[in-house]
Length: 277
Image (tube, rainbow, N blue to C red; front, top):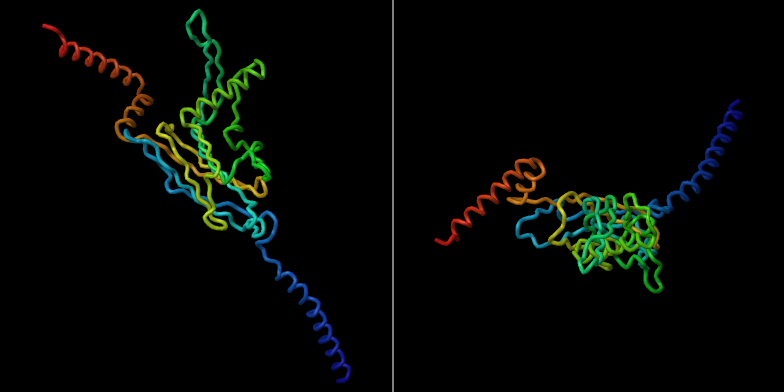
């Protein structure tokens, strides 16, 4: 009886040892696969030096510093420069009207106009390289996600004309915005300060519009879109300018009456001071 019990116990021990020997290689094989090497693990983190910019009477423009990091970047792709970052600052959206003047009997008058729906009033872009690409380097997949001045969606309101005229008005709108400094491209403005950390400096013009702007950082790998991050930036007027702006929008009737009264008082005062006796 004891011999049978001993034999049964020995068989159970051998079975347990066999199971452990089979499980050990499997556990070892799983432990050598680093979790950070899985496909699609890259992500983007960003921050900026301020979340609000105050517009004062002597405001002459400023720089906005944006910094960030590419987390879980592939070391091989990173070493050969396959990661690109594009940072843009899009201003508040509003309808914009472009007018074309023609000369009629020696006088320049507005003959035709086109209104684009909800376009950014300002647009500043900075990137690690040119979006359109360069010799030997593939272009970034920017048109599909609306990145870049040339890829801003300019949708006309109720337009039924020809495509040539539409292209002409779109080009004119972008040209006027660039001339005023409100649309600014800056290829090469984003710099990697280490293998994964980057910094961008966006130049904000003196005539930057008031309102909530959106900082948009986009990560590309081998020219293909990976992900993007956004942060809000508030641009507000301060002091007397803000008081006048608030009065004009919140109390338009009183603001108009006060403007007329101020004009009358100014005109009367000037006539008194400079009248000839």
